[in-house]
Amino acid sequence: MRALVTESDERLLIEAAQRDPRHFAQLYEDNLDRVYAFIASRVHDRVEAEDLTSEVFHQALAKLDRFEWRGVPFAAWLLRLAANAISDRYSKPSVRFEVAGEEIDPSFDEGTERRALLMQLLDRLPSDQQLVISRRFLDGRSIAEIAGELGRSEGAIKQLQFRALQSLRQQMRSQHV
Image 1 (cartoon, rainbow, N blue to C red):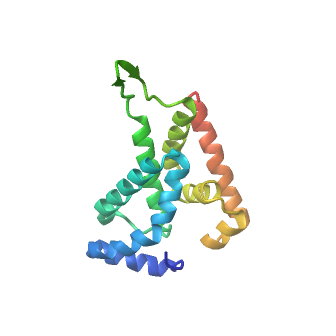
Image 2: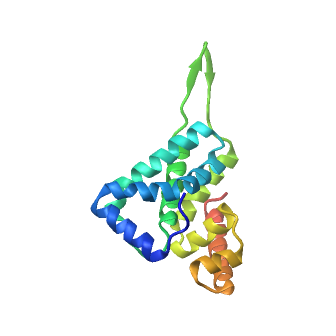
Image 3: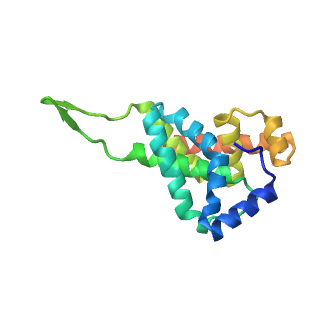
């Protein structure tokens, strides 16, 4: 993986990839580990994580022409796609299998359903709140690290985190979870 690129470098790379998909390879290389780690930490199955990671980058390439630069790192968009892919995968109706005459129901436990719902709700937050929550709780970064990365004060990051958590809490309550 390359060293972190500046915001303007990343923007130029995205614009180049929008004009010519061959440039997407660099975006893929720069973000593969982060997207895979994000997914693997949620699905706990290597094959499933690899499959979902592939799906995320396939979607990203297909939707790249619709991506609009808003000053938020490209990785945040990819992580949103990843969260949606996980949510979609686990919110589909339960499938039943029959093995040697015995029916198996691979339904997911309540914790998995709550995580899928939480990922859906996270996607509804404003992009700056999504970014702070994903950096803080998914990437394990400190308030100071996030503030430095985003060029904002620690107080501003704490406020974004507070508002995001408050919103998620209210939405979870309204879903009766």
